[in-house]
Length: 170
Image (cartoon, rainbow, N blue to C red):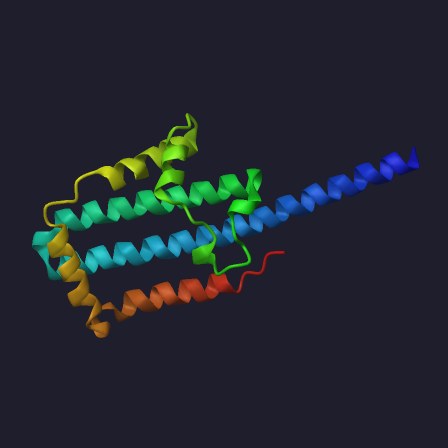
């Protein structure tokens, strides 16, 4: 009886520690997603401010980035709880998850929330690029070649990344 009780207590402690670790990893990944989305929001806004004629394509681009990052967020949360081997938490946070197009297609066939999010991203990747996509990429290149123009946004992103890198999960 004592052995059974000890085994149950150890199992409960292990499960509780694993759940706490997963919660920590999920929070750290969420911080990465939020920092990345903030960077792309800033980039889209800077582009729109400098090139008002690209406002529509900037929003299109931003929606695609949001769909991509929200899929990654949902996938990391799912895999941490269901198949932690798919999340490389020993790597830098931006390399934790590698979803190839095939993986997204498989996820998109699911009927749960993760499947819906994956389907949106899969459909984005299969859709025809915006007619002003090339002009947008050229505007990005122009903005990124002038560091002073992006300094505030880049510092905000770098500070958020530095802060999340200090989070230590077991």
